[in-house]
Image (cartoon, rainbow, N blue to C red; front, side, top):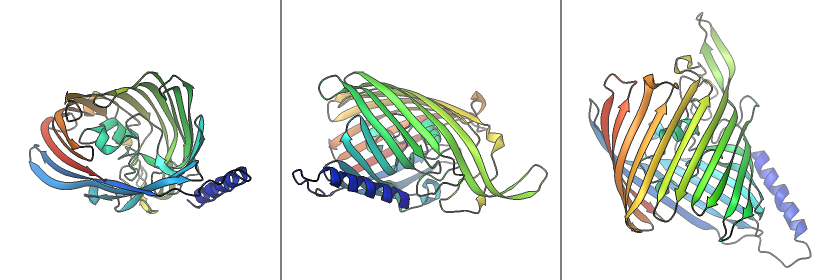
Length: 372
C-alpha cells in the first residue's frame, strides 16, 4: 500500500501545480461519515435443521473530496461470523480516484474488482439474502481459488470512463480496466504476476445496460504441499485464472431485472487461506477441476411503489463445470421499505444441490437493514 500512497501524493502535487495562479480551491471538503448494519435470521431445513440470529455485516465509512477533483473513501467492516466470512474487523475499501475527466478517471488503492454488474452493488440494494453464487465464487467474495474472503475487492489501479452523451446525464458507452495483485484484500502480491480485469457496456436506454467482462491473471500461495509420491514441498504455487462474464440489466427506482453468466478456467487450492499467513497449505484442489460456471436471473418488482416489492431469483452454480455437482437456488420473497434508511427483506429458497446425498432442502432468510 506504500506505493499507492506515494502515487496519490504525486497526483495531488501535480494538481496543486495545475491550480497555481487560479482561484483557490479548498483542499478538502467536509468528510462524510456513513454506514449500515444488516441483522439476519436464517433457518436451514436440511437433515439436521438449524436456525440462528446473526449480525451478517456492519460497516462504517468516511469519504469526501480533495482539491475539487479527487474522491477518497475508507471503509471498515465487522462480520457477525468470523469463522466463515474471514478476519474481522478489517479494511475493505481504501482508495483515491482522480475525477477531473469523465472519460478517464484513475482509481488507486483497494476497491471492487471491475467484474460483473452485481459485484459493485450495495449489499442492501442487491435485494436478496446474498450475492448470486457465481458472483460470490467467481468474483472474489468467497472465491473458488481459496483466496481469503475479500468482498469482491483487490489492491491495484484502475482506469475507467464514459463516452457519447445521450441526454439526461446518460452516456452510451462505459469502459473500465484495472491491474491488481490477484490476492484479495489487505494482501501483497505473492508471485509478482498481476491480474488484468476489465469490462465494457452500452446503455442504449435509460436504466438499461448490456455488458461483457474479462479477467486474466493468477492466484498464488506461499506454503507447503505434498505431491502424488508423498514428498513434502515448500515454496510458491501460482495458479492461472481466466474468466469472462456476459451481463444485462434493467433498473429504475422500483424495478430490478438482471442476469449474468460467468465462466472460469483455472485450478484452486484445497483450503481457504487467511490473509497474512505465509505458511499455508498450498495443496492444489485437482479434484474440483479447472472449470466452473454459473448463471442467475432475477426480478424485483413493485407491489406498492417505493414501499413493497416482490422478488424472485433463479441462481445456478457448477463448481466443476458439470451438472453432477451443480447447486441451484429457486428464491421468492418480499422487501418492505419503512423508509429509505430502514428495510426488511424476507425470502424462501428451495435448493437442489447434486453434490449432496439428499439433493433437496429449503432455507428461510429474514434481514433487517439500517443505514446511517
